[in-house]
Picture (cartoon, rainbow, N blue to C red):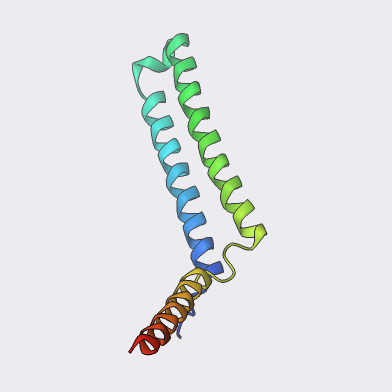
Length: 104
């Protein structure tokens, strides 16, 4: 079975890996914190919550950016800019070749 690599597949895979890695990291840090003696102190708990929510908002921000790019269609044809540049380069080479032939 051959898997066809499409931009949607790559985006979905990247999206899933990002969410899972940050989620597992947050769970691991939560377990470490609650197993330590700092969990009993209220001020340390507030600091922990600040860091936890900062990371949560960071991942939500990245999700929003990627979702906005996806819905705007930026992942439909990711090869188009490269092909446009190659076409432009070919046109420039043809124009320079014609200009050189006129001089000779």
